[in-house]
Amino acid sequence: MTDQSSALENAVLEALSKVEDPIFERDLVQLDMIRNLQLDDGRVSLEIELTTPAHPNRQQIAEAARQAVEAVAGVSQARVAIKARVPDDGRSRQSEAPIRNAIAVGSGKGGVGKSTVAVNLAVALAQAGASVGLLDADVYGPNLPTMLGVEGLPAPAEKKMLPGQAYNVKLMSIAFMVKPGQPLIWRGPMLHSAIRQFITDVAWGELDYLVVDLPPGTGDAPLSLVQSMPLSGAVIVTLPQKISLEDASRGLEMFRSMDVPILGVLENMSYLELEDGSRVDIFGSGGGQQLAEQTDTPFLGTVPIDPVVRQSGDAGVPVVVSHPDSAAAKALVAAAEQIAANVSRFALEAGSDIQLDIMD
Image (spheres, one colour):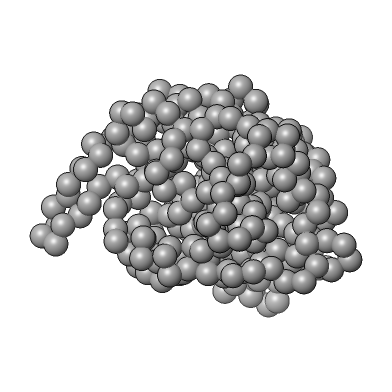
């Protein structure tokens, strides 16, 4: 490399050091996110390696980097590509292939749309380009196969169960093991064994995220899950009404008591928008944000009541696929992006490989 090229490369890196990743509030050079920087007679190309393909600011970062590089003297054109490498949270899990992060979706009570959130969260992450698994740990009410339109499992391979798949999401549920309508009357030890087998005896393959749909409450299922597989964090789903908030708060504190980070609170069924544009707060308003503020946890936003959410779930086509331009779908995608960002940020704070990249 000539002295002139070396000076230009240094100037480009200096310009990129002024562009920050909002998740970490540190610049791209400090975070070691610049890859394949190439210079060719004033034309510059580079890749930015983010910590998740579902980064909520990926387009803004790319544009800011392009503008910064093109402002450098001697640069005539800059081409910026975005790629991602999802970091491992550093927690050991009993799986043959790496499961880099495990996200529990829970609530303190039933009927808040927790399963709908879990399904759409998983599909939104997969749509962004992540490798995603979805574990139906709600063994007493397993309905994720219906919501994803998956009717059965492939034949086992090498003494391992193979998950079903839809919308690039791998799915495992107890619903595949029992007859339709058959109730599961299990006590704690059987529940613990089933959840452990879903982790160790399923060929999940390499996953960036395993989303886990929990049953409501604070009983055996979440305890068994944490004992069987360390969690990157938990998402708390609530309605805005007071009773739901009380139960959601109990669920949140249960995770905290087990040292599981809270990735955020999502308020579901927040409001109903009428044809004239007015809103009706059927279950009250502001409760989810209030809970997040009181517990010092991130607030992931509000998801409105919309018949297409129910219709999509019944049809086995998640709303982020069937009606991506609906307010509900946009809110769920935004929540998925924020959850992915918080997973990366908490991995940094816990001392994972991200921290090793940026520490002096």
